Amino acid sequence: LPFVLLQSIGSGLYIANLSLIGDSLGISADSRPTYVRAVSYCNCLGRLGIGFAMDALEVRGVHRSDHILITAFGVLLASSALLFLPEEVVPHALLPALAVTAAAYGANWAIMPSFIAKRFQGAHVGVMFNIHSGHIALTVLLTSYVVGGLYDVEAARQGE
Image 1 (cartoon, rainbow, N blue to C red):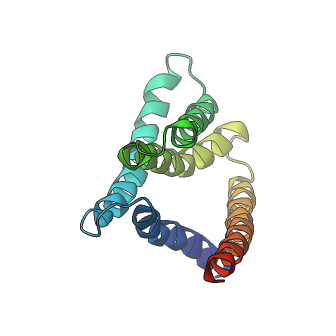
Image 2 (image 1 turned 135 degrees about the vertical axis):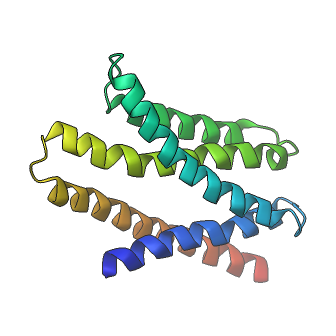
């Protein structure tokens, strides 16, 4: 139960904050639900797409673990684009960057159990899956705590 709560809180906070992110970038209230829907759809497409890609590319010599690097590169590319683009371009680049990030996050949940099963030949897959999932849950909890603290400090500074 605690794992399920942490995971749902993490995803819920992320998707709920998309509207706030859009608001801070000046995106209209009518357009913000599009961002939330796009993240949800891309998350699902990332899971499905990487599942097919792993099976199709494995016979061509691409290992299942290589897909982790591909998705990490996608997130790095999307994050770098948002970081280094001029401020006036960021609202236009936000939707594609979120789509890539959501697809990579969804792909992680398809890659990880498949990689563990292949790496350990089916032995201890449940234990390894739970350890990996627990790390993600702890990361979400820590990130939420740190970012929440930064948000509270900035809100107090702006309120003065």
